[in-house]
Length: 396
Image (cartoon, rainbow, N blue to C red; front, side, top):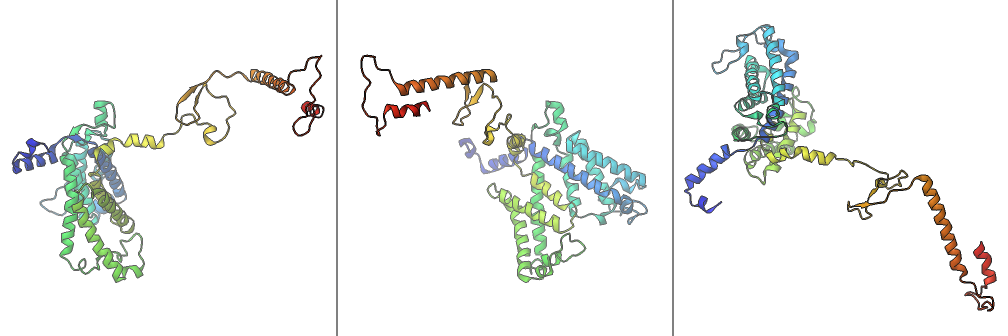
């Protein structure tokens, strides 16, 4: 904080902080990643409805008419035949895919929101809170410049898909605040009941046989100590995530704990798309720079040597090598090597070199010959071996 900033009144500094929190431009990589993940989740959500469209939403299904609630709207309250359901389903699927790839992102997000609301309000008995959270997230993206990063819209402008514009992060902030609101509101609502306070709520949840994917043994679900720990641990974790996620030091730890918590829910209890919808909010806390560096990090991780050799694997390479070699110290410095001779020239050179070495060795052993008028020296050799005895060995 500069001197000029400290000289400002507290109210002015608070206003500046508030404005920067919502509107200070930053690269829109996080928003683009949320849009891709959200479009993918909605496409899977739409595909999951295909087999039950007539049973859940038609005039001859479990809910022949949409309930008349003033705050709820939907296209299928007025357009009720089977053809309308199929057309709406197909448009929702196409719009979700378009949103995932970032093709006319804002229009696609608006269509996704309208059709999600239309299906959910048509028959609310077949949906849960996860489906409602998807509808809220669609509304946020409908008013966001979600095509400003990682999109075909951005590719048309810059020529590259993995780029981002600098935009105000108000949509990302709304998603982040939504995460805190969910956890804190859930904690407060559970504290008003009795099953969470007396530590038995998890025991009831793990004995709902019709909703369980993995059945927990009865010896665990009726154990007072384990169920008290699970119940109070869930309460503490949800409150910790909702509050400590705003602390930079605690954020990685509480987010990792939350991801593990929701994955356990996903594989044990049939909660539909609740876990994916919650993890979309977690994605809003990822640093934009980390997403920007993701392709480079993946390339470094998967990079392979361009010209692998047997020598790199600890074996001799019999094939001719290029003129440049790496030095023996592994420093990556290239050594300039002369051109290698052909195989025939190599054999000839090797033969001449061997003959010269034999001749030089023989000359070095024999030494200079004494002159004719001087008798050879008769001094004994070391070890008592004479020249006459050593000659056969040299010849051998």
